[in-house]
Image (cartoon, rainbow, N blue to C red; front, side, top):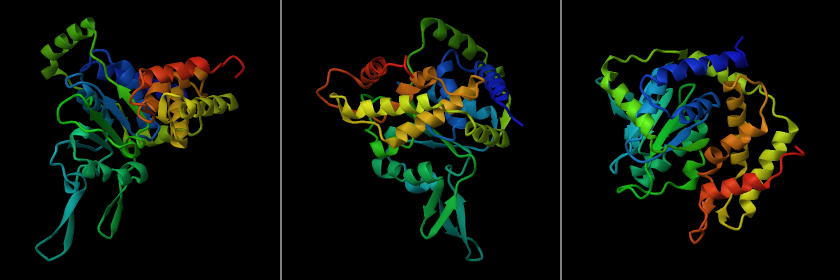
Length: 310
């Protein structure tokens, strides 16, 4: 039977494989793995060229699972995502499945796709199923979507609706690498054609870890701390819309998964602090006239909630 120490060991092996292709960014990779075993979706946001897509593809390569990719373009259609039906030679209706019917789905540059098409993802992300006409088809287990998006100041991007982004457990900012990381990246790129990423886990391993996540203990003080944080986002004067109960559930799921990755069977206060920005940043709507950004608001909330008595 798999235990917390096994999950920690698995992640360390995956991290070793990721380092063959990626310089730095290990915090981002860890959160991607957290989302995977928490049975949720993750969004990476950053400028073009900061390895968002490479990280996602490389992580997927460490898993013995099916992989699909959707490229966000202005002409992306519903059938490009889910597929289409057609008549075969015997006049039977057949389904040509789209890339969404895979265990791991990369949605690259999601905010370049037309809003009408991205909204069609809601059912798949939330209910893990696809409806085509009168037929509803389940997606494979596990089904994990990993999306990338560019900052809104990049040409051709549009703002994603909150109802869509809220379906992602976390949104993680991918910053420019340090000079040392860029130098290491060049060394990796020089020999990348000879680099093979090994499979570390299977679909069954992911499903086992997802079940193990549910067994991680969440003390009463953690429940209190999570609800205080999310409630504070609703009353902050700089916020138009705060976190919903889904944010609290995401804290719980990610907190349990993070504890396992660290080899523990219980969530800590530090886990929740570490997850605050990834869990909340895409769920808070800030006043347009405010001088404080989303991350500043979250930092302030964390700083103002005492934890000594918890």
